[in-house]
Amino acid sequence: MSDPYGEAGRGGPESPAGGAWDGWFPSAAEFYGYRSHYAGLPLVAPDEAGAGTVTDPGAVAWLMYHEEIDGVCEGFVRGDRAEHARAIVINGWDDPIEDGPDDVIGVLTENADRLPRLRSIFLGDIPAEACEISWIKQTDVTPLLEAFPLLERFEVRGGDGLRLRPVRHGSLKVLRFESGGLPGSVARAVGECDLPGLEHLELWLGVSHYGGDATAADLEGIFSGERLPALRRLGLRDSEFQDEIAAAVASAPVVARLEALSLAMGTLSDAGAEALLSGQPLTHLRALDLHHHYLSDGMMERVRRALPGVEVDLSQQADIIEGERYVAVSE
Image (tube, rainbow, N blue to C red):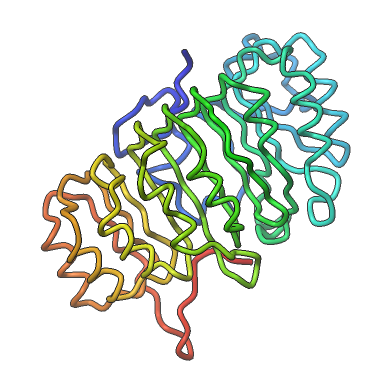
């Protein structure tokens, strides 16, 4: 079985996802630029110079980007390299502001039998300089999970039009949704999915202005952990109701089995931190990521003292601007 965390393996705080990001969770800054690796593999476009010299098609992640990307994908999946491909990154499509990636998804799902070794997909890895995250039009991504039952890593960027139906997927280990506004229906669907092997779950919830209508109640399926028995890393991030999430986390059954928790990138205040400290013990965690927050200096010190053996990230103490707190990523 391939390792979705890549060459570095699991468990280490330096690279829990095999070189895909530094630390336990990716930082917001990583979506602003173009990546060079994915799932621990160097990125190569099928039609770029040098692609023909790749001797092992399974040793690279294949980057699909083109205005006519469905044609590029179809050409790739019908070629000799497809049967060896382990990772595919969809870096854009015809017009991601106006249209979703339905055609790309169709090409991949209709040719799933030609991609027997595919284990990792990033749908919509479009950097901010090319298209703001809130502008990326998405669609129902469930067909990809249904067509690839051996998929171990699935990541999606963009929340506009994003849909997910509850499914059972026995192989998935990493599931991430990055958005400037995550629909509540998607948050609920994640909690209703049966994902017995999932180890890393991450949602960027965003703001209501960009379609983020999820509430803490929509996360109850995740908080219970009933369908997530293997979960070890949970990120509920970039939320304008971060304090409510913190209060729910304080008594959530899923927390007891986690090794890393991220409530970063949102509007966390002293009230949310107080709820965390007043709830169930967090001393079993190896890492607590709270970066980009609105905690006072005194509360930051209290958090550090309460969790002496935990790697706590309290970087990026943000300032309230004209009485408002802002998430790290929205537009």
